[in-house]
Image (cartoon, rainbow, N blue to C red; front, top):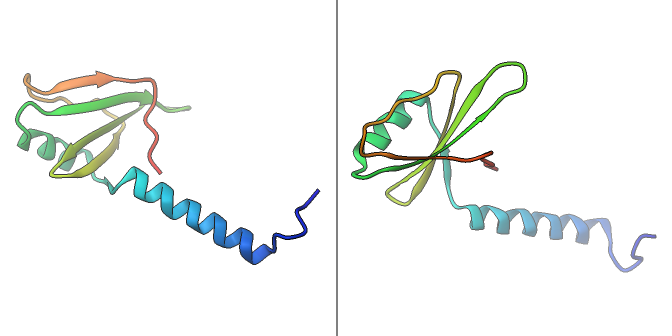
Amino acid sequence: MANPGVTAGTAAAAAAAAAAQARKASGAIVHVEPELFQEIVGKSRDGLVVFARGGFLSKKYYYLTTYKGLFFYASSTNELRFSGDTEVISVKSIWAP
């Protein structure tokens, strides 16, 4: 049963506020091409990369790292390679809004 005190406008405003709050919580996530992602990781001393495998019909690789306060995200059909001092953590999945 619908709440008679809630109008469509009120519900839309609440949904917009919730979406804005979710964006603030997740911070800025920048989607980049795999080559640029590797360059960014190479700039970080003792870098950290979070990595997940996925894909339904074809294999896909997903990557996440931070650099200078921003989150960088990339996806690739080929597995990326990083220098030996980069720590790579394999996870089940990566979710990005």
